[in-house]
Amino acid sequence: MISGARLVWERRDGRVVEFPLDGDVLEVGRDEDAAIRVDEPLVSRRHARLERRGAAWVVVDLGSTNFTRVNGERVLRERELVHGDELRLGRARCRFLLGSFTRPPNPPSE
Image (cartoon, rainbow, N blue to C red; front, side, top):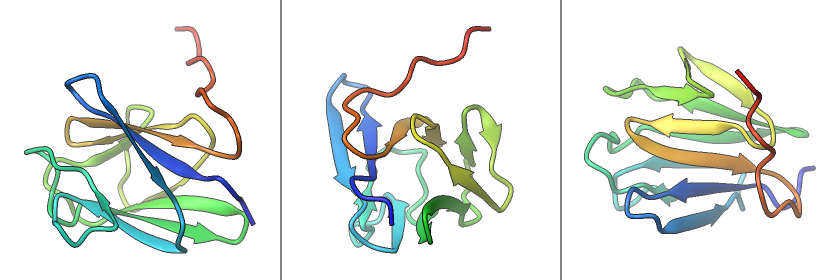
C-alpha cells in the first residue's frame, strides 16, 4: 500500500492547499460534499475521482465539462498516476505526490 499520497492544489492566488489521500475512493470537484474540494469556476461539481488500486492510484474523469488532464494529456476514462504528475481540472492545477517527498520532480526538458 502507498502511504503518504496526496494531491496538492496550486491556487491561482499562489496559495497551496494539500489534501492527504486517506481513503480508497475520493471524489474531486467543486461540490461542498466532495472529499477533495477544488473551488474554482471551471471545475465541475463532480469532476473526477481518485481511486487506490492495490499499490497504485488512478484518476477517473466523471464526464466533466472542462476535462481532466494529466501532464497535458486529456483523460478519456482513467489514467494511473505517478509521483509528480500534474493534474488539470479545468484550469485548476494540482500535483500528485507520494511518500515523504516534499517537492515534485523537475518536469522533463522539452
